[in-house]
Image 1: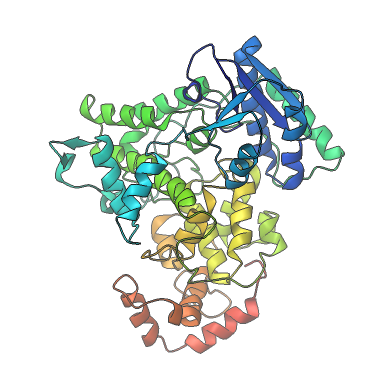
Image 2: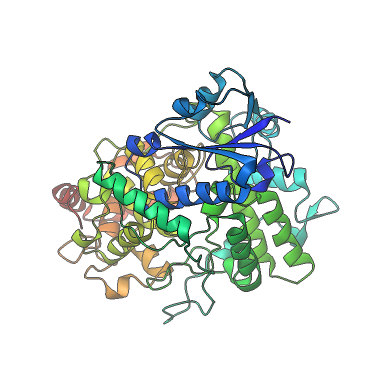
Length: 487
């Protein structure tokens, strides 16, 4: 039986063919020298890797070295490895002798099946179309060839604002891990590495995300029992005092390979069929895992190094230091300060503030997309090379084919959150000292880049409204003077 080399994002049992298969695990310090990762992301990755080594015991060879090549010099036997999750890692393992590369695991739709579907679409690779294909192909929430409930997506029902006056949803928070001796060792090593010159961003803190399959499974079960029913309804809502809302907080568990997404999708489907969980929540969760996550993964490989669409809102300015360093204290706009602060403190915010606050502000300011991709990769505990290009370029920046840019003014943020009530800026104002930077930035973006936005039905109403604004020139001048200073 060949020894299976597992990378640090391939840590679940579904990456092995046999329970007693011999394993190779490598911890490379050089990975953390190359990029300034969030301190809590570094902790989570190392904790998960070391916990897996402890679980496997004598079944695994666990090497801690400076580089992968250094570790592999001492391994003489043939190895096999599941297809890595970045193009750089794939090129590396393919360059090695005595290493067999197996097909990818940890996703639902195989890359060959996606490629066959995509080749037949002639460039129209809409996520909604892929999601329907995946539901049909895998037989998920389908009865007699038709979607349960009569519709493939109930997304329009999943855009309710948070309950009026609520500071939190009345839901139990996800279970938190209990740190152990391995976590203490990781923290001591990271402290030492910092003294030696390895740089991190963000702040240290208690581990909040699963580092073992057992912890991840417990969080999944808790979500299915206590939060799934509410997930769809408030999937796009934000509350300043409720970072979890009804989200599963399982993205890092999937991306570390601790959870098998096939099993999670089937468990959510059973919650609907056997336990009567609301379709809006079940379908919304399945759309995130089977639909969006697999779509992002497969686009990364289908298009290789070339992104599928032009970056229609191409930024030319560098991301400023205050944003790159997560300096929330420099920001007065409440939503941006709060979200940037949560990222600094925890290495994670749910997907809506990522896109509606962080990504939205960045594209309004015209910051370089490549720098944002790198920041999101380094700064989020669930950020990986395959996950960020389509999320940042495709969603926030209108680079993906026929997608509407994920940009909005302060009015929409006000509708979907409770941030604006405690903010010094007025979401209704686009000019003056009280002008909301998101409202002013939104109209400045449309005015500045309208020729890059095709006047299709998805943007026609906004562009027509822009033509009726009497003070567009003043807004543009105001935002030019604001520049990249923290709002």
